[in-house]
Image (tube, rainbow, N blue to C red; front, side, top):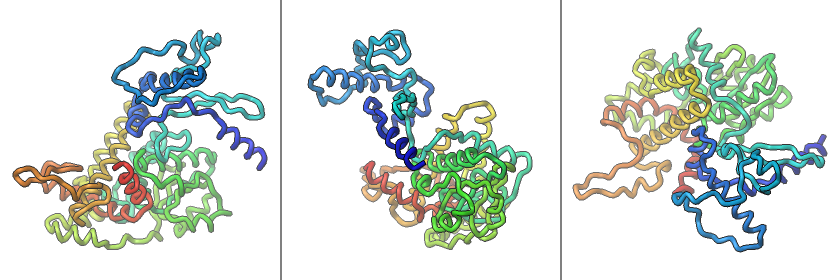
Length: 410
Protein backbone atom coordinates (compact mmCIF):
# COMPACT_ATOMS: atom_id res chain seq x y z
CA UNK A 1 0.00 0.00 0.00
CA UNK A 2 2.71 2.62 0.83
CA UNK A 3 4.43 1.80 -2.45
CA UNK A 4 1.18 2.33 -4.38
CA UNK A 5 0.56 5.67 -2.68
CA UNK A 6 4.14 6.71 -3.40
CA UNK A 7 3.78 5.84 -7.08
CA UNK A 8 0.45 7.68 -7.28
CA UNK A 9 1.93 10.73 -5.55
CA UNK A 10 4.88 10.85 -7.96
CA UNK A 11 2.61 10.37 -10.99
CA UNK A 12 0.22 13.17 -10.01
CA UNK A 13 3.03 15.60 -9.22
CA UNK A 14 4.71 14.81 -12.56
CA UNK A 15 1.58 15.91 -14.43
CA UNK A 16 2.40 18.58 -17.02
CA UNK A 17 0.65 21.86 -16.17
CA UNK A 18 3.13 24.11 -17.96
CA UNK A 19 0.55 25.19 -20.56
CA UNK A 20 -2.06 26.08 -17.94
CA UNK A 21 -2.25 29.89 -17.59
CA UNK A 22 -1.91 31.42 -14.14
CA UNK A 23 -4.97 33.58 -13.65
CA UNK A 24 -5.20 36.38 -11.10
CA UNK A 25 -7.67 36.14 -8.24
CA UNK A 26 -10.17 38.44 -9.96
CA UNK A 27 -9.83 36.55 -13.24
CA UNK A 28 -10.53 33.30 -11.41
CA UNK A 29 -13.64 34.82 -9.82
CA UNK A 30 -14.85 35.94 -13.25
CA UNK A 31 -14.21 32.54 -14.82
CA UNK A 32 -15.85 30.70 -11.95
CA UNK A 33 -18.97 32.86 -12.21
CA UNK A 34 -19.27 32.60 -16.00
CA UNK A 35 -20.65 29.85 -18.25
CA UNK A 36 -18.69 31.19 -21.23
CA UNK A 37 -16.46 28.34 -22.42
CA UNK A 38 -14.21 30.76 -24.34
CA UNK A 39 -13.49 33.16 -21.49
CA UNK A 40 -9.72 33.89 -21.30
CA UNK A 41 -9.08 31.54 -24.24
CA UNK A 42 -6.43 34.01 -25.43
CA UNK A 43 -4.36 33.21 -22.35
CA UNK A 44 -4.29 29.52 -23.30
CA UNK A 45 -3.33 30.46 -26.85
CA UNK A 46 -0.55 32.68 -25.55
CA UNK A 47 0.92 29.84 -23.48
CA UNK A 48 0.84 27.52 -26.51
CA UNK A 49 2.44 30.16 -28.76
CA UNK A 50 5.27 30.58 -26.25
CA UNK A 51 5.80 26.81 -26.22
CA UNK A 52 5.81 26.64 -30.04
CA UNK A 53 8.35 29.45 -30.12
CA UNK A 54 10.54 27.64 -27.60
CA UNK A 55 10.28 24.40 -29.60
CA UNK A 56 11.60 26.25 -32.65
CA UNK A 57 14.56 27.48 -30.65
CA UNK A 58 13.53 31.12 -31.00
CA UNK A 59 13.75 33.77 -28.30
CA UNK A 60 10.64 34.41 -26.25
CA UNK A 61 10.10 38.09 -25.59
CA UNK A 62 9.16 39.22 -22.14
CA UNK A 63 6.58 41.67 -23.42
CA UNK A 64 3.34 41.50 -21.41
CA UNK A 65 0.30 40.15 -23.18
CA UNK A 66 -2.13 42.90 -24.15
CA UNK A 67 -5.61 41.36 -24.09
CA UNK A 68 -7.17 44.64 -25.26
CA UNK A 69 -5.57 44.22 -28.68
CA UNK A 70 -7.48 40.95 -29.32
CA UNK A 71 -4.86 39.46 -31.65
CA UNK A 72 -5.94 36.81 -34.15
CA UNK A 73 -5.52 33.19 -33.13
CA UNK A 74 -1.96 32.11 -34.00
CA UNK A 75 -1.75 29.59 -36.85
CA UNK A 76 -1.39 25.96 -35.86
CA UNK A 77 -3.42 26.25 -32.67
CA UNK A 78 -6.65 24.26 -32.65
CA UNK A 79 -9.35 23.31 -30.19
CA UNK A 80 -9.00 20.05 -28.34
CA UNK A 81 -11.14 17.37 -29.96
CA UNK A 82 -11.32 19.07 -33.36
CA UNK A 83 -10.54 17.16 -36.56
CA UNK A 84 -7.20 18.93 -36.99
CA UNK A 85 -6.18 18.05 -33.46
CA UNK A 86 -7.31 14.43 -33.69
CA UNK A 87 -5.54 13.92 -37.03
CA UNK A 88 -2.30 15.16 -35.51
CA UNK A 89 -2.00 18.46 -37.34
CA UNK A 90 -1.50 20.26 -34.02
CA UNK A 91 0.86 19.22 -31.23
CA UNK A 92 -0.85 21.49 -28.73
CA UNK A 93 -4.53 22.32 -28.42
CA UNK A 94 -6.70 24.83 -26.57
CA UNK A 95 -9.20 23.22 -24.17
CA UNK A 96 -12.79 22.90 -25.35
CA UNK A 97 -13.83 24.59 -22.10
CA UNK A 98 -11.49 27.14 -20.52
CA UNK A 99 -12.88 26.24 -17.09
CA UNK A 100 -10.82 23.03 -17.30
CA UNK A 101 -7.24 22.29 -18.32
CA UNK A 102 -6.81 18.90 -19.95
CA UNK A 103 -3.67 16.93 -19.12
CA UNK A 104 -2.54 13.35 -18.48
CA UNK A 105 -1.14 11.39 -15.56
CA UNK A 106 1.20 8.55 -16.48
CA UNK A 107 0.58 5.76 -13.97
CA UNK A 108 2.39 2.47 -14.57
CA UNK A 109 2.86 3.48 -18.17
CA UNK A 110 -0.84 4.11 -18.70
CA UNK A 111 -1.87 7.68 -19.71
CA UNK A 112 -4.87 8.69 -17.61
CA UNK A 113 -6.81 11.77 -18.88
CA UNK A 114 -7.16 14.45 -16.22
CA UNK A 115 -9.15 17.68 -16.16
CA UNK A 116 -7.85 20.32 -13.75
CA UNK A 117 -10.12 23.27 -12.81
CA UNK A 118 -8.56 26.49 -14.13
CA UNK A 119 -10.29 28.72 -11.58
CA UNK A 120 -9.08 27.15 -8.35
CA UNK A 121 -10.11 29.20 -5.32
CA UNK A 122 -8.62 29.17 -1.81
CA UNK A 123 -10.09 26.50 0.49
CA UNK A 124 -11.72 24.71 -2.45
CA UNK A 125 -10.80 21.04 -2.31
CA UNK A 126 -12.50 18.21 -4.19
CA UNK A 127 -15.83 17.98 -5.95
CA UNK A 128 -18.66 19.16 -3.71
CA UNK A 129 -21.92 21.08 -3.92
CA UNK A 130 -22.84 24.07 -1.78
CA UNK A 131 -26.42 23.65 -2.96
CA UNK A 132 -26.54 20.11 -1.61
CA UNK A 133 -25.16 21.24 1.76
CA UNK A 134 -27.56 24.17 2.05
CA UNK A 135 -30.58 22.14 0.98
CA UNK A 136 -29.76 19.38 3.45
CA UNK A 137 -30.28 21.70 6.42
CA UNK A 138 -32.62 24.30 4.90
CA UNK A 139 -35.28 21.79 3.82
CA UNK A 140 -35.48 20.29 7.30
CA UNK A 141 -35.60 23.75 8.87
CA UNK A 142 -38.42 24.92 6.56
CA UNK A 143 -40.53 21.85 7.33
CA UNK A 144 -39.86 21.81 11.08
CA UNK A 145 -38.17 25.03 12.27
CA UNK A 146 -35.76 24.40 15.10
CA UNK A 147 -34.84 26.79 17.88
CA UNK A 148 -31.34 27.03 19.28
CA UNK A 149 -30.03 27.71 22.77
CA UNK A 150 -28.61 31.21 22.72
CA UNK A 151 -24.93 31.78 22.07
CA UNK A 152 -23.62 35.26 21.06
CA UNK A 153 -21.24 33.91 18.42
CA UNK A 154 -23.70 31.53 16.80
CA UNK A 155 -27.29 32.73 17.16
CA UNK A 156 -26.86 36.18 15.63
CA UNK A 157 -30.57 36.27 14.74
CA UNK A 158 -31.85 34.90 18.01
CA UNK A 159 -33.07 31.36 18.74
CA UNK A 160 -34.60 31.12 15.26
CA UNK A 161 -31.33 31.78 13.44
CA UNK A 162 -31.14 29.78 10.20
CA UNK A 163 -29.06 26.60 10.72
CA UNK A 164 -26.77 27.46 7.78
CA UNK A 165 -26.01 30.83 9.39
CA UNK A 166 -25.32 29.03 12.69
CA UNK A 167 -22.91 26.76 10.81
CA UNK A 168 -21.14 29.66 9.09
CA UNK A 169 -20.91 31.56 12.37
CA UNK A 170 -19.36 28.48 13.99
CA UNK A 171 -16.80 28.25 11.18
CA UNK A 172 -15.97 31.95 11.36
CA UNK A 173 -15.54 31.91 15.14
CA UNK A 174 -13.44 28.71 15.01
CA UNK A 175 -15.72 26.33 16.85
CA UNK A 176 -15.30 22.54 16.92
CA UNK A 177 -17.67 21.17 14.27
CA UNK A 178 -18.75 17.59 13.64
CA UNK A 179 -20.67 16.36 10.59
CA UNK A 180 -22.39 13.12 11.57
CA UNK A 181 -23.52 10.80 8.78
CA UNK A 182 -24.79 7.64 10.48
CA UNK A 183 -25.44 4.90 7.90
CA UNK A 184 -24.22 7.22 5.14
CA UNK A 185 -21.22 6.54 2.87
CA UNK A 186 -18.03 8.14 4.18
CA UNK A 187 -17.77 10.01 0.87
CA UNK A 188 -20.98 11.91 1.60
CA UNK A 189 -19.66 12.96 4.99
CA UNK A 190 -16.33 14.07 3.53
CA UNK A 191 -18.14 16.06 0.85
CA UNK A 192 -20.14 17.94 3.50
CA UNK A 193 -16.94 18.84 5.39
CA UNK A 194 -15.24 20.18 2.26
CA UNK A 195 -18.37 22.09 1.23
CA UNK A 196 -18.54 23.72 4.68
CA UNK A 197 -14.94 24.88 4.38
CA UNK A 198 -15.67 26.49 1.01
CA UNK A 199 -18.90 28.00 2.35
CA UNK A 200 -17.17 29.95 5.10
CA UNK A 201 -14.18 30.79 2.91
CA UNK A 202 -16.11 32.17 -0.03
CA UNK A 203 -12.81 32.06 -1.91
CA UNK A 204 -11.71 34.93 0.35
CA UNK A 205 -10.88 33.61 3.83
CA UNK A 206 -8.38 30.85 4.56
CA UNK A 207 -7.46 28.52 7.41
CA UNK A 208 -10.34 26.02 7.28
CA UNK A 209 -9.14 23.08 5.18
CA UNK A 210 -5.84 22.89 7.07
CA UNK A 211 -7.77 21.82 10.17
CA UNK A 212 -10.45 19.80 8.39
CA UNK A 213 -10.77 16.04 8.76
CA UNK A 214 -13.14 14.86 6.00
CA UNK A 215 -13.45 11.47 7.69
CA UNK A 216 -12.33 10.27 11.10
CA UNK A 217 -13.36 7.72 13.74
CA UNK A 218 -13.28 6.96 17.47
CA UNK A 219 -9.66 5.76 17.38
CA UNK A 220 -8.53 9.30 16.56
CA UNK A 221 -10.62 11.25 19.09
CA UNK A 222 -7.66 12.15 21.31
CA UNK A 223 -5.73 13.57 18.37
CA UNK A 224 -8.83 15.38 17.12
CA UNK A 225 -9.46 17.10 20.43
CA UNK A 226 -5.95 18.54 20.35
CA UNK A 227 -6.86 20.56 17.26
CA UNK A 228 -8.57 23.90 18.00
CA UNK A 229 -11.50 24.66 15.75
CA UNK A 230 -11.56 21.42 13.78
CA UNK A 231 -14.14 20.48 11.12
CA UNK A 232 -14.55 16.71 11.07
CA UNK A 233 -16.75 14.14 9.39
CA UNK A 234 -17.80 10.95 11.21
CA UNK A 235 -20.30 8.11 10.79
CA UNK A 236 -20.29 6.72 14.34
CA UNK A 237 -23.35 7.91 16.34
CA UNK A 238 -21.30 7.73 19.56
CA UNK A 239 -20.04 11.24 18.83
CA UNK A 240 -23.52 12.66 19.37
CA UNK A 241 -23.50 11.34 22.95
CA UNK A 242 -20.33 13.27 23.82
CA UNK A 243 -21.16 16.99 23.57
CA UNK A 244 -17.88 17.75 25.33
CA UNK A 245 -16.09 16.69 22.13
CA UNK A 246 -17.74 19.29 19.89
CA UNK A 247 -19.36 22.73 19.85
CA UNK A 248 -21.66 22.19 16.88
CA UNK A 249 -23.00 18.89 15.52
CA UNK A 250 -24.54 18.77 12.04
CA UNK A 251 -26.58 15.60 11.60
CA UNK A 252 -26.72 14.89 7.88
CA UNK A 253 -29.54 12.27 7.79
CA UNK A 254 -31.98 14.41 9.79
CA UNK A 255 -30.76 17.80 8.55
CA UNK A 256 -30.63 19.10 12.13
CA UNK A 257 -27.93 21.25 13.72
CA UNK A 258 -27.22 21.00 17.44
CA UNK A 259 -25.28 23.41 19.66
CA UNK A 260 -23.38 21.57 22.39
CA UNK A 261 -24.58 21.90 25.97
CA UNK A 262 -20.88 22.00 26.91
CA UNK A 263 -19.88 24.85 24.60
CA UNK A 264 -17.75 27.60 26.13
CA UNK A 265 -19.60 30.83 26.63
CA UNK A 266 -18.43 33.85 24.67
CA UNK A 267 -16.31 36.22 26.78
CA UNK A 268 -17.24 39.88 27.13
CA UNK A 269 -14.58 41.61 25.03
CA UNK A 270 -13.23 45.15 25.11
CA UNK A 271 -14.59 45.74 21.63
CA UNK A 272 -18.10 44.81 22.74
CA UNK A 273 -17.90 47.11 25.77
CA UNK A 274 -16.43 49.99 23.76
CA UNK A 275 -19.14 49.68 21.11
CA UNK A 276 -21.90 49.80 23.71
CA UNK A 277 -20.29 52.82 25.35
CA UNK A 278 -19.95 54.62 22.02
CA UNK A 279 -23.47 53.73 20.91
CA UNK A 280 -25.68 53.82 24.02
CA UNK A 281 -28.83 54.13 21.89
CA UNK A 282 -28.01 50.81 20.21
CA UNK A 283 -26.32 49.05 23.12
CA UNK A 284 -29.43 46.98 23.79
CA UNK A 285 -29.47 45.70 20.22
CA UNK A 286 -26.17 43.89 20.77
CA UNK A 287 -27.60 41.60 23.43
CA UNK A 288 -30.95 41.66 21.67
CA UNK A 289 -29.44 40.19 18.54
CA UNK A 290 -28.47 37.15 20.55
CA UNK A 291 -31.36 36.83 22.96
CA UNK A 292 -34.54 38.26 21.47
CA UNK A 293 -37.12 36.58 19.30
CA UNK A 294 -37.50 39.94 17.58
CA UNK A 295 -33.97 39.66 16.17
CA UNK A 296 -35.21 37.72 13.16
CA UNK A 297 -37.95 40.27 12.56
CA UNK A 298 -35.51 43.20 12.85
CA UNK A 299 -32.86 41.31 10.84
CA UNK A 300 -30.04 43.60 11.89
CA UNK A 301 -27.49 41.43 10.11
CA UNK A 302 -29.47 41.02 6.91
CA UNK A 303 -29.00 37.23 7.16
CA UNK A 304 -32.72 36.46 7.11
CA UNK A 305 -33.15 38.26 3.79
CA UNK A 306 -29.92 36.72 2.49
CA UNK A 307 -30.98 33.14 3.26
CA UNK A 308 -34.38 33.83 1.69
CA UNK A 309 -32.59 34.95 -1.46
CA UNK A 310 -30.34 31.86 -1.42
CA UNK A 311 -33.34 29.56 -0.98
CA UNK A 312 -35.21 31.33 -3.78
CA UNK A 313 -32.17 31.08 -6.09
CA UNK A 314 -31.84 27.36 -5.47
CA UNK A 315 -35.57 26.83 -6.05
CA UNK A 316 -35.31 28.59 -9.42
CA UNK A 317 -32.32 26.40 -10.37
CA UNK A 318 -29.82 29.25 -10.40
CA UNK A 319 -26.91 26.79 -10.34
CA UNK A 320 -23.83 26.09 -8.25
CA UNK A 321 -21.79 28.97 -9.66
CA UNK A 322 -24.46 31.52 -8.75
CA UNK A 323 -24.71 30.24 -5.18
CA UNK A 324 -20.93 30.29 -4.73
CA UNK A 325 -20.81 33.86 -6.05
CA UNK A 326 -23.54 34.93 -3.61
CA UNK A 327 -21.66 33.39 -0.70
CA UNK A 328 -18.47 35.10 -1.79
CA UNK A 329 -20.32 38.43 -1.70
CA UNK A 330 -21.61 37.61 1.79
CA UNK A 331 -18.11 36.84 3.08
CA UNK A 332 -16.65 39.97 1.45
CA UNK A 333 -19.40 42.06 3.02
CA UNK A 334 -18.69 40.52 6.42
CA UNK A 335 -14.98 41.36 6.23
CA UNK A 336 -15.76 44.94 5.22
CA UNK A 337 -18.25 45.36 8.05
CA UNK A 338 -15.64 43.92 10.42
CA UNK A 339 -13.12 46.49 9.18
CA UNK A 340 -15.64 49.28 9.71
CA UNK A 341 -16.33 47.96 13.22
CA UNK A 342 -12.63 47.93 14.12
CA UNK A 343 -12.16 51.47 12.82
CA UNK A 344 -15.23 52.65 14.71
CA UNK A 345 -14.24 51.01 17.99
CA UNK A 346 -10.44 50.85 17.94
CA UNK A 347 -9.69 53.76 15.61
CA UNK A 348 -7.95 51.63 12.98
CA UNK A 349 -8.30 48.24 11.34
CA UNK A 350 -5.69 45.75 10.20
CA UNK A 351 -8.27 44.55 7.66
CA UNK A 352 -7.92 47.80 5.74
CA UNK A 353 -4.28 48.70 5.15
CA UNK A 354 -3.80 52.42 4.76
CA UNK A 355 -6.95 53.47 6.63
CA UNK A 356 -4.86 55.81 8.80
CA UNK A 357 -3.60 57.63 5.69
CA UNK A 358 -6.90 59.06 4.52
CA UNK A 359 -6.70 62.17 2.44
CA UNK A 360 -9.04 65.03 3.17
CA UNK A 361 -10.76 67.30 0.72
CA UNK A 362 -10.30 71.05 0.65
CA UNK A 363 -13.30 71.37 2.96
CA UNK A 364 -11.65 69.02 5.45
CA UNK A 365 -14.07 66.18 4.83
CA UNK A 366 -12.61 62.67 4.73
CA UNK A 367 -12.49 61.07 1.30
CA UNK A 368 -14.11 57.92 2.66
CA UNK A 369 -13.42 54.25 2.05
CA UNK A 370 -14.69 50.77 2.78
CA UNK A 371 -18.27 49.67 3.31
CA UNK A 372 -20.83 52.51 3.15
CA UNK A 373 -24.20 52.94 4.87
CA UNK A 374 -26.93 55.41 3.98
CA UNK A 375 -26.82 56.98 7.44
CA UNK A 376 -25.22 56.57 10.87
CA UNK A 377 -28.22 54.85 12.55
CA UNK A 378 -28.21 52.18 9.83
CA UNK A 379 -24.50 51.67 10.35
CA UNK A 380 -24.87 51.41 14.13
CA UNK A 381 -27.70 48.88 13.80
CA UNK A 382 -25.82 46.61 11.40
CA UNK A 383 -22.66 46.79 13.49
CA UNK A 384 -24.74 45.96 16.58
CA UNK A 385 -26.09 42.86 14.84
CA UNK A 386 -22.60 41.73 13.80
CA UNK A 387 -20.50 42.78 16.79
CA UNK A 388 -20.58 39.44 18.63
CA UNK A 389 -19.51 37.30 15.68
CA UNK A 390 -16.94 39.91 14.61
CA UNK A 391 -15.40 39.81 18.08
CA UNK A 392 -15.52 36.02 17.94
CA UNK A 393 -13.76 36.07 14.55
CA UNK A 394 -11.01 38.49 15.55
CA UNK A 395 -8.89 35.83 17.30
CA UNK A 396 -9.12 33.05 14.72
CA UNK A 397 -6.82 31.58 12.09
CA UNK A 398 -8.94 32.91 9.23
CA UNK A 399 -8.80 36.44 10.67
CA UNK A 400 -5.01 36.53 10.91
CA UNK A 401 -4.52 34.86 7.53
CA UNK A 402 -6.85 37.45 6.00
CA UNK A 403 -4.68 40.23 7.44
CA UNK A 404 -1.65 38.63 5.80
CA UNK A 405 -3.47 38.47 2.46
CA UNK A 406 -4.46 42.15 2.79
CA UNK A 407 -0.83 43.05 3.50
CA UNK A 408 0.44 41.11 0.48
CA UNK A 409 -2.19 42.69 -1.79
CA UNK A 410 -1.07 46.11 -0.71
